[in-house]
Length: 164
Picture (cartoon, helix red, strand yellow):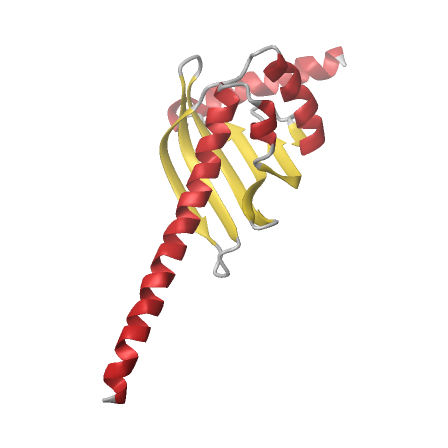
């Protein structure tokens, strides 16, 4: 009889645990979705509220590894002119650490202007909220044209070294 009395408590504990995991998924998904939404809307304050205090943003150019304050200076100038950037997520994968306080993701993004990109990032819990600690935007190169593109990049970098 005592075992039957435990069943409701066990079921309650299970039912409470499942929404918490779903909530983590929704929270991380919301942060990533809002990252793209606020960039498209040129809403700088909301955009940068999504990042951790020590975040790093890496752009498509090899020189673009920005501490969050440097990236903020660049992006806020654009946002204040009403110029954002639009990427729509086509497919996303999200994973969590065993402790559930770190999440990482990769996604395929579509830009009407430039085509397909890949975004990757890491989120962490900071002050009770998911914050983006690292974001990396890159242009994936199909294997069939990789060598040709790599040669162009190598030549570009040589010319840049000569100019510098």
